[in-house]
Every structure is written in structure tokens, then in C-alpha cells.
Length: 353
Image (tube, rainbow, N blue to C red; front, side, top):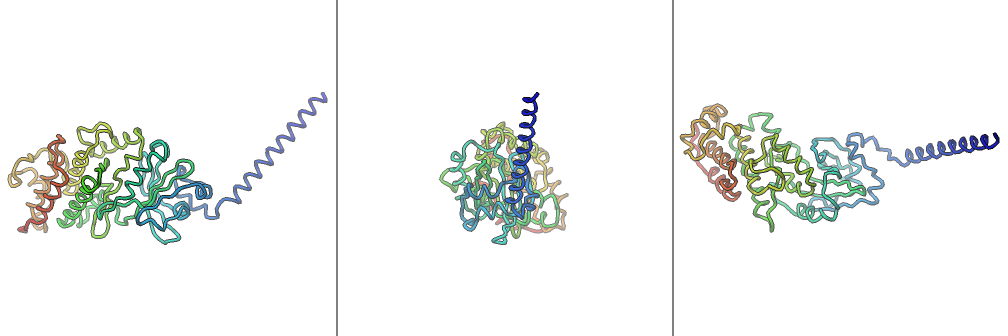
């Protein structure tokens, strides 16, 4: 009986000591937590970083345009979710110290490739690319738990998909359609031919075309698939298929090529012209544009006779889109050929109706 009382006393003391330790740790945690922790409420649970720990152990790689970035700037910035995907989350973040706005792309650790060292050559490559029609990578942050953040400029005018969907008068102006088309082509040309080794975008679509002043286009997300593991890249392929950007020959991300980028560029052109793939497929791309009755009728509906758009330029651009969307990769034009054709279309002297 005496032994039983002793055991009960020991258990009671142990429980009290454990409760004391728990309360003490909780109080220490509260004291150490930042006063501004309320800012973290707009971040995903996955991105709710332990800021103090990451500032001490995290690594920030800076590129051109991000020389003034610090770990504190990035991790302490109030963030607003502006986009989500199966592999990450996009945040619009206000950098307090520099009073500027950036986009932070949080890549889920489970979706990225192996060790950080294995992906650093890809990060360095993407970070070195600069072109007037490509979204630059300004910084890359790696946290102690495998968290990865890409830092990009923020473009206030949103993306091309939103611009087309809003359907305001600007989206039907030939000058705007042409400026966006040739800007995307030039950015893609730099990726395909302007580097020591071509970079295939892998996920080109209107949502990944950001717009600056005067609807200047900036291609984003190029090469992002190189940072993701096979499972995440396959989800990217499936998402693209749902949105109509999957070429017929593409089953997995391993099948991507410059021709898949050309196909997706053709789909974007059709979106800009407010045409559908089905409408384009019904027309014969080998026909002269003057006799392409199906497209002629559809374009006349979109751009009525009193609109400041030349019919021949629109039809020429629609035919270029159809060739880009050819079911056979070998029949799709190279990006150099596309740029040349666009220059010819742009230099054409229109006879406004």
C-alpha cells in the first residue's frame, strides 16, 4: 500500500512538472514571436515560415534587379495570394524597406526536384536571362526546411487571359493585338535561339503572359518545369490539357520541345483574335486568305466594318496561328520564321474599310 502511495505521488509530481514545462515553452514562444505576426495571416499555412530561424539559416541568391533584396524584406513582407497551382502559390508582396511591390512564388517542397544543389544550375541559368519581353528572376530563396521562393517584378496590369476575358475596347484594337503577338514571339525567340542552349518554356499560355504599360507583354514561368519533380510536371501537363494548351503529341513533360511551345503560341494568337481552335481547324490553312470563307465570316462578326482593323492583316495573323497549331510538329514554323512573318504583317499597308 505504501508503494502504491509513493507511485501515485511520483506520477502527480511528474504530471505537474510536465504541465509547468509546457506552459513555460508556450510563454517563451509567445515572447519570441514577432509583434507583426498578424501579417502572416495572408500567407498559406505551407508558407507560414519561422522567420527568425530562416533569417539565420536561409540562403538568398540575388540577380540583376534584386541587388537590394534581403531575407528580412522577403520573409517579413505582407503578402496577398494572387494565384495558386498544384505546385505552388503566388503572392503579391510589399517590401517595406524599399517601398516596392514584388511577386513571390512559393514552390511546395514536395513538388521540387531532389537536393537544392541539383537545381542551382537551373536557377543560375534562369536568373541570368534578360530580355524586354521576358519576366526576370530577381532572387531565389532557400529555407532550412526546403522552402523555395522565386522573386519576380510585379506587373500591375495583370495577365493576358484577364485582359482578353475583360473584353474592353483595347483588346480589339489591331495595334494592341499586334504589339502583344510580336512581343511574345520575340521573347520566345530569345529562349529558343538567343542563348547558348535553347530553353523550352514548357507551359506557355495566356495566363503566363503578363502585361506592362501600353500592353507590353512579358513571358513568365519559362523553364519552371526544370525545378519540379516528375509528378508535379505531369500535373502541369494535365492542367495545360484542360485549358487547351496540350499539343497532340505531348503525353508527358518529357515530350516537350520547341514545337510544343510553337503550338501553344498559336493557341494564344487564336485567343487574341477571339477565335477558337475548332473554328480554325474547320478552315484550310493552305487556302489563300481571301478565299478562307469560314474565318472571313467569323472575323467580320468580331470586327465589324466600321472598326479600325484591316481584314487582311487579321486573316494573315489567323492563318499564322493555324499553321502554328498544326497537329504535326514538323509542319509548325520555327520561331524565327514566325517573327519574320509577323514583321511582314506589321509592315503591310492596310486599306481601312
